[in-house]
Length: 141
Length: 304
Image 1: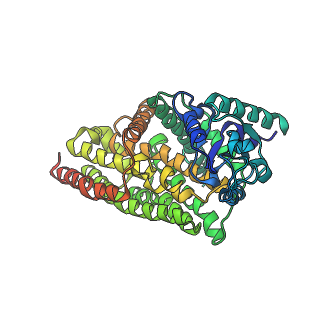
Image 2: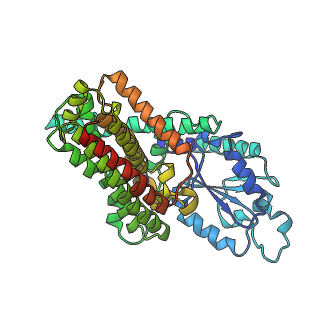
Image 3: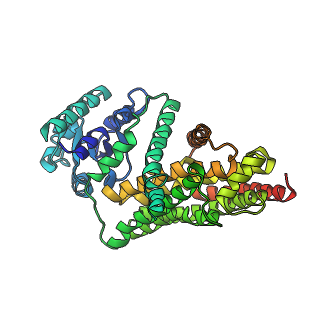
């Protein structure tokens, strides 16, 4: 695998998108950055601009308002860029499955690389998911 | 000719100062992490970040392509020139030229100007907010910084050459040992904090507020160059402060100790202060800081 891709797995800058979530997943994501779990040990940083992103972290059921915006955000991100779906809503719409406002799951809209289930997922589960993704990236190419 | 090129490109110019700056950036992140009671990133984290950015796609927003892509190099050029000029006086004992202090003051504004040009060329509203804040910040901190440098120059019989500053302090003792020297050092330290875009004065890059501000549209190689420029400045500005204020003993051990000490001061100021609004930082630099710098100037004229 190339050196730059290997560097990517050690320095993942995360852009956080809340596409209509109830905020619980977002709170757990912020927990991941607090001193207890300290994701910066692995070079994982939360950044503000989508142009700097290596991973897009998406929470929440995709409602009609947020789907075009999520698509636009993915187009604006520099590649290679992975998409991570966090929480049961983003994975399978959860309790919003029959909602008038929610049509498709996230993986119908974007190529999702990593699913982290849970309502909300624990920070440990997210770390586990990221480790699996990094292993997959290192072996896959 | 080859020696000059070597000075600016390898040691102590681009390569050396980039490596030292990225390591200093790691010290910054590690100390910050320890203050937060975290573990912090490994020592090679900043190198990994730069390497990763080289492999990313570079997206150019519609508009001024040449200006957008060229702007980072202007800042890098300025920072590398300053690194070479300060480093060769401090490390290799070369003489420099008459008036290189003035040239350095000019070159040090180039990174800020390149940020402003790049932000304006990106046509992003948040970037333009960041750019306008950067302009105001440059206008704010240049005044007290230049006054404090003039005070130091007056204390050294009006010389404007780095090697003379070093030579004078080597015989008469560091400038920081006098009252006017301490005042000027405090002013210059805070101005350097603003020049580096560290926390109390990082309104132009506010991550949480305007999403990276001036850097918002940059990705891939140009972003890596901006990060490198910042790293080189982080390596160079403490050395410049060492030459200006702490020039008594320039043996390698003492230079490293002074360098780490000044970096630690930067990091402590960064971690114990919240971000100030841009109008607050202008008021701070044109108010108290300018008064303190003028006091240092007055004391330097009297000879204290």
